[in-house]
Length: 400
Image (spheres, rainbow, N blue to C red):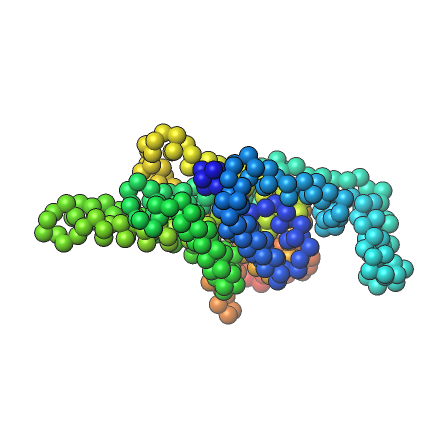
């Protein structure tokens, strides 16, 4: 039963997609963190249920029972209106709007913005659902999704390396020899990570917060791989003054910091993907990131099956991935207080902002989308160029 509890997934639930689409920009992260706290509370209650059930079959049945009422989810909760409008399912969107107006006791005829008349004109259009494969033909969107996939894979994969360093065979701590103490330590670190993510993301934004936690993960991993080996070499000398207890304390410290930061990296990658992926393929993009996170967690039982062989190489590979993630994260856009992209072109134009704001009076290197669409000045310049004197150009200069 202990091994089953240890393998419980900490992935964010995909039900956060409807919550993100329903919330205003300033409340999206708050709603997601509430769901994370509920998941962490369930993780804290799991050992108590295991102690009461005594048998893993009974525990498995008890865990599955709450999912049975969720089969009625499709009939109780409405479909996302944002997704219906983005995929041109205007007939279903009209029924949903009328349902909302009836429940809220509103008069649909007093529509100030004129949504219903415009919706009536578009009812003849066929629905246009988009597959996640369309991302392959984009220029920027697929890069954002791939970067977040690598981040989630690294965050959830390296989490096991830090957990094993803290409670594995190399570190012998009497407090952590108990399974329940081990489990509650990991759950407490996850809870502390969720609590720390809230102020960090509020202060630094999505990209800045994710970059900070990736840097912490990389530092903890590199120090654990390099510094501990150096301490182990010095501890072999009798005059060095270093013992194995010093190495154990450093290992526990780096493991706690690594588990703390890697948990935040995995959670933020899932949430970040849900924000920057367009509405038409949001579930598909989120599925790719969750699949990458699951693949990262699958590396843990593979190492256990081989009797801990290859653990050092396993940790080195994920440490190199964290260094790669630090560079790739600079390519991501900032989604804080931004509207959700609806279509693939919206997600394609959702590019990164410069790290430093431009100086006053400095001309941008690239034109904005609005300036690129306005070509009226070219015709005026061409017409004015016909009346210029000889050997004069359209901008008033003279050729050399």
